[in-house]
Amino acid sequence: MTEMSKEYAAALFALACEEQAEQTVASALEQIFSVWQENPAYGELLASPAIPQSERRQMIAQAFAFAPQHVISFMQLLCERGRIRILPACVEEYRRLLQQWESRAIAKVTSAVALTEEEKAALAQKLQRFGSRTVTLECTVDPSLIGGIIVEMDGRLIDGSLRHRLQQVKEVITK
Image (cartoon, rainbow, N blue to C red):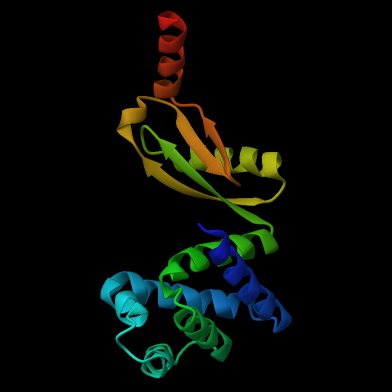
């Protein structure tokens, strides 16, 4: 994520807060991001200097008419400034800002085997005490971990995997 995408997302978030439309903007951005992912050529089309800016602005307004006007204007601004390609990073940063504003955190958990609901609940509870906010888990399975889990939350990485521990032992032995 670039500093530029953070600045653009922060500006959009500030505008959404002024209008008390944080969730409305988030919902519109999620819909736009979904369309963006399903049609990667659309981003290239909007970035094309061969198409006049007025046409690209109009394409944005028509394609995303469901979105609030300030979201459409945001996308048009990105397009005008030649930065439409950073839209996915802007959406990701907006999500992060919204979660922070709502005192929520997302913990990306990777485990060697699928966690049970009880294990997920216990882990979420421990992480909530650690961060003093509501934690939502995004769980994935990676059998190469051999055992244990890796947790990434708020830019921190907690590697409790057996693979990591074995690597540490290997480093001690080879020194």
